Length: 239
Figure 1 (cartoon, rainbow, N blue to C red):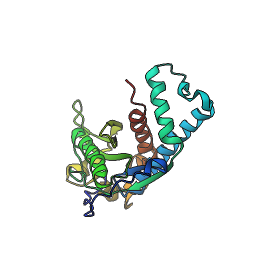
Figure 2: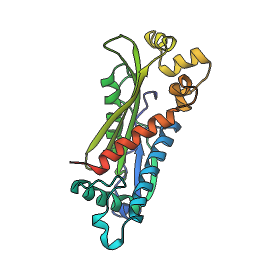
Figure 3: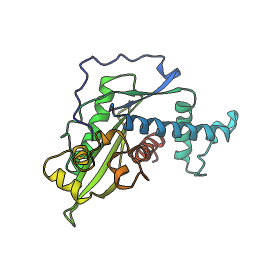
Figure 4: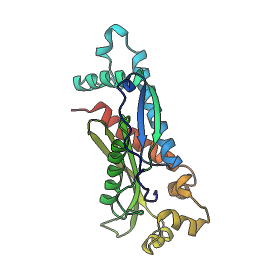
């Protein structure tokens, strides 16, 4: 989890009329290199996907393009058309904008973690009018209703300039007892990890998930898959 960050004091950046013809700008509500890299990888995968679609169609038949899943729903086809226009002819740019989460530094409920991700995405759009999509990524823990154990949880919120947003969560798993004990004593998860392993800034490396899986799954992979899902849901806007 990130520490609660201060919102930049600078005034919102004025919008530019030429931005849509040049860059597709995604704002990441964090300065954590793991989260930034996860968003960059997810966005690159999405852009590559639309490039693949473009190669499978002709310029004269663009409106009839279909995703590689061969979905035939008209709404999906229309959304893919719009996404092609937005993503193919613009240079992808990732901007980092550390903002306050509006929740505690260590979210302790599912709802608080979700709200933190949503708050971050909303503030990014307010801070910079050039942003096309904003990503808020928040990690937290929750208490399982059945067992009373602490579980790790991640929420990602993707929001566009029009105010539409999609939220996804995942990577929910039980915390090891020694880490859970640290959180119950008031530590943040990264500090509980340091107390147990002696490794500093685990949240900026492979993360707690990397430690408990022996590196088989990293924090970047954890956030990348959820970011890709949130952005995909927002872009396609299936009805």
